[in-house]
Amino acid sequence: MKILVTDHDGNEHELEALEGWRVMEVIRDWDLNIKAECGGACSCATCHVFVDEKWIDELEGPTEEEEDMLDTVPDVEVNSRLSCQILMTEELDGLKVKLAPSSRNEDAAA
Amino acid sequence: MSVNEITTDVVVIGAGPVGLFAVFELGLLDLKCHLIDILDRPGGQCAELYPEKPIYDIPGFPVINGQELTDNLMKQIEPFGPEFHFNRMVTKLEKLDDGTFRLETDEGEVFRAPVVVVAAGGGSFQPKRPPVPGIEEFEGKSVFYSVRRMDDFRGQDVVIVGGGDSALDWTVNLQPIVNSLTLVHRRDEFRAAPATVNEMRKLVEDGKMNLHIGQVSGLEGENGELSEVHLKTKAGEATLPATRLLPFFGLTMKLGPVADWGLDLNDNLITVDTEKFESSVPGIFAIGDINYYPGKLKLILSGFHESALMAQAAKKIVSPDEKVVFQYTTSSTKLQKKLGVV
Image (tube, rainbow over all chains, first blue to last red; front, top):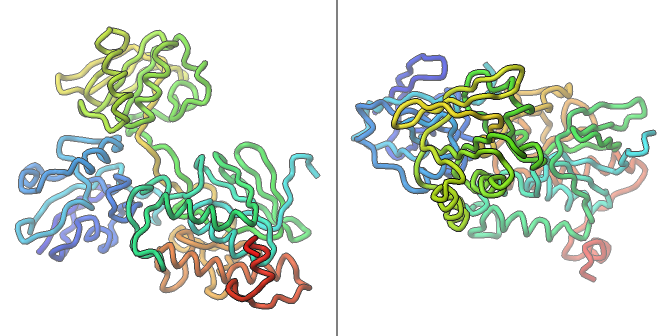
């Protein structure tokens, strides 16, 4: 299965994903720039993505914990999600997301 | 020599779990430590990001949370009397002609030590900055990420953004002294302590402050002096008169000055050897998440191991003529005396 990810520079990447992986882990594993500083514990909100509107309703809604963390995202939108809280399933094959500015790791090598 | 200079065996930069455990390993070898951290308390990521999250891979603890681990480490290193310097960032690190290091903090303190241990994790925690164009020019003049002096807000038109404890606490605390106060949050639910949220709701009800559901989209003003804040709300755009803005979106890690210290880096991590965990500058060690070597795993337990080996090498620098006998805490009366258990 695949996911489509638009990076911080606007380039779209088609990434091979594995069932059960978190979307954040797929993005990180393919070496796209994503800060994800807490490592997937829903504790930092630096894996923030905008989910394509066609896909937003296909996802399980955010937990209260994720909503609380989204409060700490300065660039939040209605389609904001934390990519560490989206688990890949067959149904999400083709999922399209865009990395939010607040998920950029400014210290990463270019 | 400056009067304010603090001289010690080892300066540890970062008081996260690995920096704390380094104090233990160095302490067993009689090395005295000063720790410097940008947060206001020990624990680093464990305290700031996941104090209540369970950690399952600390040897000997089937489950422990970030705060408990920090508390335990603090107890474990207590016998060695580490000295902490919180709310500070090391801005300068240089090697002097006599081979010792001179460190300077953003608060102006100066430290001198023959060994420096960088245990800075992912860098220093800095406030998350809202992506509002031109916000930088207002920072420090009318946009603040913390309240250092309440007087800076007296009689001002204050806009506070956020839904956590910092946002709500300062809403309630500043309201009596400001000219006007507006709280802006993305939703009409707040994760702050319920009592404070109720206090805020009462102030809104009594017409003593305003609450807007939305987010800041723009700033107006000149020479760093804010005059208006633009909001994007569900109802549309809004503009508020504002002379102070306090965004409270929590903290995120930035590498900071570590990159300027002349150390060899690999993708912004400090390259070390795996015998001593020493950087490219002899006498400067790097342990925990901030270092890089082939096969590195960013695990707390890796940092603990690195601390133990680093300490042996640090001892040789501080006391080159002293013969160090490797001992176990279980059997050595000498070590047990240091730990205060016999």
